[in-house]
Length: 64
Image (cartoon, rainbow, N blue to C red):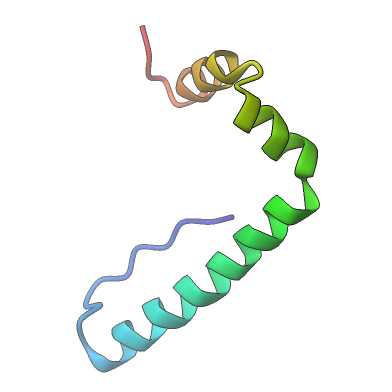
């Protein structure tokens, strides 16, 4: 999944682009969660949640 910065998002094109991208992006995200039930269960049960967060922050150069 890539990040997109939309400048001028208040105009006609920007408003419609952001609206469409949010709708399709949300559907794709929901589909991903539905296709990865083990991951969702692990997160909801807190399994290795701290480890995942620490790895995520470390990969971004953040943390301790």
